[in-house]
Image 1: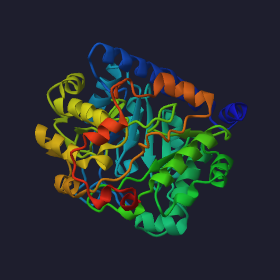
Image 2: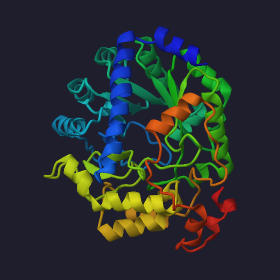
Image 3: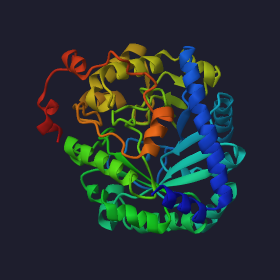
Image 4: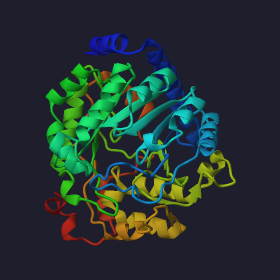
Length: 422
């Protein structure tokens, strides 16, 4: 399998793009993680990877979307992005995830990418704005990988995305990238209506098309129009994890996950300090689905000072790590509400209803299933996670699932039972 993957990388990609990815995403990305570890030992903090939502606008209206896509357009301008990326580079960072809304609706996106060719950008996109010309420009830049979202077949995609003929437009943008030999990935937000994509035939099709990596997210019911009926059951989440582990060991395609270490233990990238999120308004949030902040990239302080001095972000990481290895938003929305109120964190949404949404949330299962861990079978992934993607000691030896359950302060409700969660 490893030889087949190496063959694919050598034969199916532009060698210049491959070399740039190996250097900026690979070598420099690994270096940013080691610098992160050194900072933690000194009692300092700066996340080695940042996710940035550069615009709130989107041409689609997806089920359960938490972004204010229909609100007045807000975007991070070129100069603000330039300062943000430059200050992060000074801390050793070289990789940035670009989110929206739909990032390609940002008129200066390509200029932003061009200003920092010594960095690597992963752009989460529906693919609808990736024309042949745009794909050619992405190949010319060489420092970007589009991660194209595919949500199921034509019928499911239309339902999930709130528009007709979504899949064909998405596949056209995807194919434009592949035609220009841009290093391209495909992601899917797994939910009840598209869970059947979790099959070997789909992975084989992606390989046949020339897709180099894929990412199966787990749908999280949050936001103003959360759709809890779409959420996966704990059994389905375990099935998804098992599928990813199996495919990683046998298929020549990179399969990403962000919620488990090499031993199969759950983790939260925001709780471990691996990454935080910047909103289109410049607010610095723990992660994209937690729309509260006390700091902004537009503050007078440097980004280094902001991350080191943020009591809200520090308290979030500690609170989340002390109570669960999973997603605190789903499992303990009561604790998150207390955290927001304790620090007077502002609602960073245009709708200004995030606290009420949090207050109305019922507890639901996340990726944390103590005693049911599924370790990696692939030695390559085990090594990568051991050295570069783990919990960085955030959870500590004192953390025990039993202690978490015993000290839980939220009132017991029918929603807390596995039946209701399903």
